[in-house]
Amino acid sequence: MAKLNREEVERIAELAKLTLSDAEKDMFQEQLSNILEYAEMLQQVDTTGIPPTTSALPLNNVMRPDELALSLPNDEALSNAPDAEDGSFKVRAVLD
Amino acid sequence: MELYSLTIHEAQEKLRQGEISSVELTESVLERIDAVEAKVGAYISLQPELAVRMAEMADERRAVGEDRPLLGIPLGIKDTIITHGVPTTAASKILDGFVPPFDATAIDRLRQAGAVFVGKTNCDEFAMGSSTEYSAFHPTRNPRNLNCVPGGSSGGSAAAVGAGEALGSLGSDTGGSVRLPASFCGVVGLKPTYGRVSRYGLIAFGSSLDQVGPITKDVEDAAILLNAIAGHDARDSTSLNAPVPNYVDEIKQGDGLKGIKVGIPQEYFTEGMEPGVAQTVRAAIDHLADLGAEPVEVSLPNTGYGIPAYYIVATAEASANLSRYDGVRFGLRQDGGDMWNTFSQTREAGFGPEVKRRIMLGTYALSAGYYDAYYLQAQKVRTLLRQDFERAFEKVDVMVSPVAPMVAFEINAKVDDPLQMYLTDVLTVSLNLAGVCGISIPCGFSEGMPVGLQIIGPALGESAILRTAYQYEQTTDWHKQPAEL
Image (cartoon, rainbow over all chains, first blue to last red; front, side):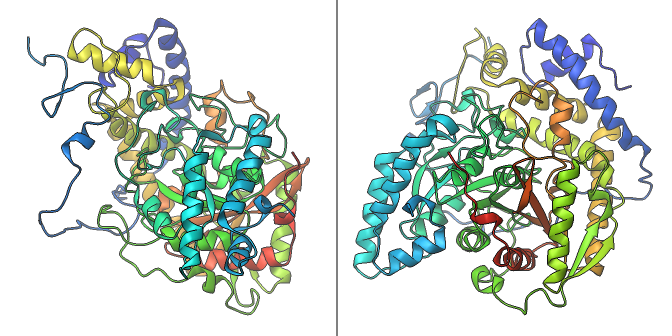
């Protein structure tokens, strides 16, 4: 199960939004296979009836009052944008 | 004695007595940086003019009678921590040029305490690594031996303190990233309990594991920095709403270590550990016993599953956290003609190999068909690891172990073998998975390089580990042997 084939590497790269080069695909196919093979040892652990950890410490939903407060001014929020126009982030068309 | 070699508490005393000014202290640190930074490479960016201005302000405030815990103390800040108006890159090209419009809560609190910021320290890209070699900019060298790595991921923060390029620093610890470099560089590094320090403004890697922590020359300094940054923050819903004791007072309480039960987890003295490391740590445990502590053998039976569980959970969280780097709101944009290609080409151009590797691994572990086998199973094993700690802390007050099975290794030794690099963290990751606290303090040398003693405490057990560390330190002088550069 742990050996990754080329198609799986390409499928993960697509999910992760990475345009990998052929050399990177080769490298990750081998390295990720090794790491996953190592992680196989987790399958040996009997976890019947053991709940998964959702938080390391016993914290439940933390609520705060829904009150108006100051937030980052628009120009500061846009100050690092690669492209902006009319107070908004500017991106390539989502729909053609 | 040069001013840059002072500890924070020594400098505080001299500042309070009027023997020195913050400008003198800060300039001494800046001169030290001029002298050694070309060799060490601890910083990604330096802000010397800003530092001198902050020091001048600190001196003015002191002149009118103000006294704050860090007033006029020059610090280095890991570049994964957001600093208002000062470039913050997380050692990644994808954030090259990013100038944050706000401060992390930890930074805000250091400002309120009067600290001076010298620069942003180097680290592995997005804190992903154990040697600081995965920085997109340059590696950092260990001030004890320039052929060796400083450890990671907060290698710049530890090297800066070890080399006298800052009086103290902040790092961040997701799987050992404060403790490991502290151990490798012969300084003190504290990973607080998950939730003890706000994560607001810490660039997210593994959100259920990340903590900001201090790196300092001695234990009292770690207590001083923790005092400043700990406490509840409404901006981080995982921050604990628990009182913050005065850790500087706490560490000096008690009659030596009389009555303290010190657990020795047998699984933390693994096969394959360098013999010099095991011997040095065993000698440190004997010393704790001489101080009145009662050593108790304990077992953390699931320790062997720590690395695989950690690297599944941490990379899964990282793959989600790093989806925000898409070239839309900040950072690099590589135009790909349409929206989807712009996203993927930006990420391809902006992320380094280790970050891509971890995103790929985490995406796989979360993907349909593999979620149950990897991610869910890892989170169940994490529960077992947490239970190990809970059971052990029913019997003992703190536990002690090495920080890593080895001393600092040579540059390039592991950089092309990710699994070997991951195994460096074998004795540190479980604490993050369990959310408990730990500190690394110098306890000797092996093959000429520092060995770190890891003292582990239960959730919110910072007082206990700091007190144990302080008692050890007061009766040894490993922390008083600075690197020769």
